[in-house]
Image 1 (cartoon, rainbow, N blue to C red):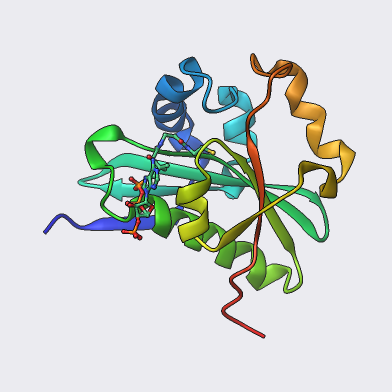
Image 2 (cartoon, rainbow, N blue to C red):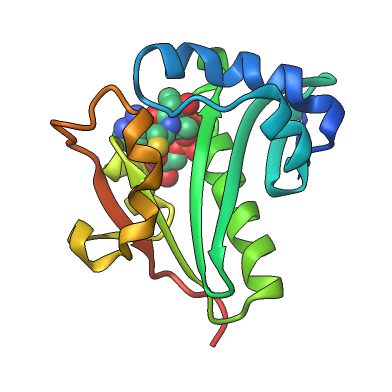
Length: 158
Ligand SMILES: CC(C)(COP(=O)(O)OP(=O)(O)OC[C@H]1O[C@@H](n2cnc3c(N)ncnc32)[C@H](O)[C@@H]1OP(=O)(O)O)[C@@H](O)C(=O)NCCC(=O)NCCS
């Protein structure tokens, strides 16, 4: 069986991360990120590596001490349905909770069934603070957004 490692990204991974996100950015499923942005914030990116190749990515964004977004989740289509997306999200959540025990973790997604399996529950968008909508101005779907807002509810620790 193919060995897959989930690990924190480093700034040198930026190019590969960009390439992984790119097809989904083009489809309008993910928001664009710049190489510079990924390099500068590589610490908040988690990657899945198989045979020395980056095949999956997720990142988290800190709004304040207690509010975090899971975003930029993508797995190379050749590796879908191998539990990689789930492991990436679990790793990113653990990373956040280790430092911020009471963090509220949310996502905005076109794929609520995947995130439900990863421990998230759909909530009304209005329950999230206004400032999370700052990215929307760059989105091609801003006027007819059909994303689902979800928050992480499956706490493994008390
Ligand atoms: C969403 C995505 C990251 C899932 O990655 P993946 O590695 O194939 O997912 P996993 O194998 O970890 O799947 C975990 C569970 O979610 C389910 N799942 C996976 N993709 C799904 C999808 N597109 N729709 C519904 N359920 C899905 C799996 O069946 C699995 O269920 P199980 O635990 O009952 O077996 C991948 O399809 C992808 O890169 N999509 C394009 C980008 C995208 O949509 N990103 C998220 C937008 S916010």
